[in-house]
Length: 536
Image (tube, rainbow, N blue to C red; front, top):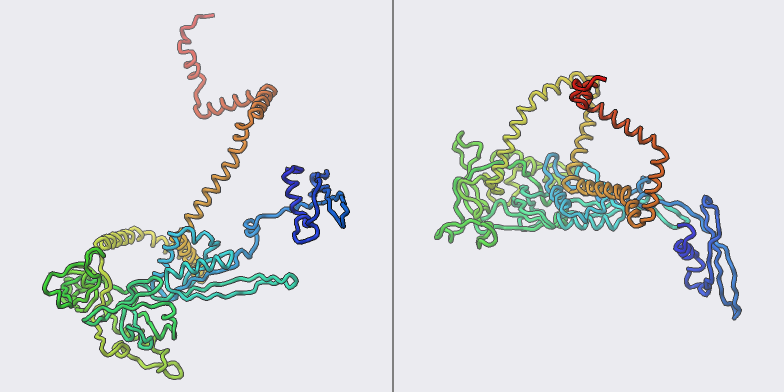
């Protein structure tokens, strides 16, 4: 409140001469302080301060008027909403893969962000880009903390850059914007990868499968030897060392997997012939998860059409049995595309010519000489629950196609009518709509929409409390004020009785409008025996 003791103490603390330390003014002592009256609309506050000090054993006391100027200022959060430069740090999350290839790494990070509410609290805005997402932050430490959290979930290469926005030479200050680039390793789970000989790694010159993606990538040999299963871990530094194109090439992605039916399984371990093979059912089962086995499979689409049987050596010996459905890559039907892909990857090797051209090579020439290419590479087993879900999805797709048959015809008629609209603008609008839909879906998976709904609900509750509760609480705490308010209401009711009559007439009109009845019906209800009344 104005001219209150609390405000006076705050004003005295803002006088530099009295607060400044390490100065001769520390010997000043405040003897008395009082307000000087000012015009309420002048935006000024005046205080008369009496100070006392000693100078060369002489005590001096003096009254000094001090004037304060009132200036309205918004809080940092409110002022930030009305400025364009609301962010100072940007985290660019990217996973650069072929067009149409699934980005499972980004999906896994979105799910992790959806489970961690604390890490996404400092995010100001999200924007979608071609190969990933952009996250905006207020300060650089917040962006670095967010990037460190992402690096623990997936292998990535981080780089920090800065940009000068504006500078003030007189005050020696500058406005900087920082960008933290996080390039994820473009290897996702279940990808078929060719490890080149130039990588000088354990699986160099062999085909491998991505079995796990965490802070490091775990590769398993897809063309295993009959003795043991080989694994290898790849870090972000190891992947980018010497050029990613020379070290690892993605041959097939998970969308190219097809379904196979297991016909026969025979373990390669000679000791397994003495007893029945056991299945892996978890760490407590006492059985190793992976074991080499000779497997015969057939394509699920070929059942009943032909008798073609494909054979391979797989590491899923303890996970599958005859009759199971598995997903894998058919190298027989994709041999031509694989040779073309390897040819593109090998064009950047040191053996290429000056113009960058290279000779057409097959997959057998790129891998090691002791590697035997198989007909099929099995990736994982399809559980019974997944089979039921896939069947339901197929039924839903077929029913939706039948239902949308008439809608497509209507859309075709509308397109013919709107032929004047430019096709280029329509394509641009479709791209913007698709980008917005993908961004909304990503934000929903990461939990940002839930946070927004909670904030809006809390804001609505706070607003309703501010409107309703303070005055009611004040009336409860002050019975005299409540009695005065009641007396005023009675005086107003006695002074303006016409308002009551108007309210009653309005209620009667509203009642008649809701339940209109004729005058005869009303008189019959009021006087049911009007015919038996005595004559006057």
